[in-house]
Image 1 (cartoon, rainbow, N blue to C red):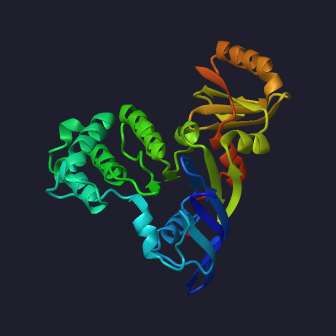
Image 2: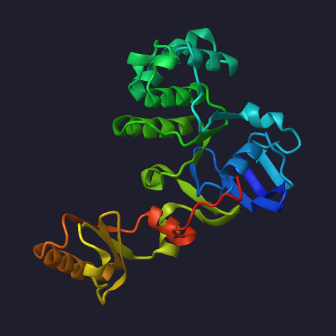
Length: 316
């Protein structure tokens, strides 16, 4: 049995212009020890789903259980069983990362003897020990974000919900953070990770679900979703300073796009040799700068499923 079970959940908001579906028959199962990624545009329904998991909202239909507890019938159990890092960092004021993390640990039942070492270990893991005793109103955005993660991680519940945990965090400490997220699963906790940074999360999640307009478009591990959407296609990306008119889509390519100073060409993997020869010739003609060749990513699969469209504001 999965630790988190969301079955056929629907939630609709009533507005002046009519009913707006935020979640439409959503079913997700997250196993113990799993990092599960929840991806989608702003407005895809991620926040509404999380709020129902925490018992902050009641679904119109469907069921939600965490560790066998019915969250729809007993909404307080959602907040009891889940540790949460919200999308917006909590303002600490004069409180320090150490003091607020200690407070959260005690609220979740930790004993004084075990708290100090656990806090020290966690701060060292994330390389923020130098700021452990600085007032929150003097911290940078990245350190404050990591302090908020520590509040959720110091005494994790059966389920841990992390909403955009890497926002404002520098690249080096981001790597430490991904390791710390994986550490949360060692005691059997299930981690639900909500993020827009799909390329960064791809190698750190076990399974993902892609939401759009409240519906689950795809679910499974990254390899399966990529196989079902982009197959064996590859992509060549190259820097350029010339316009789209300077390029013709090669006969062997599926698509050629020029945006933000880059040329992006997608093609079947068997055409990799043609792509490299094409890029080398155009580089000699000074139409292309540095270029790279790689397999399609989970982010490419996401764009294929959801589309390069304006972010929806209908769902929440």
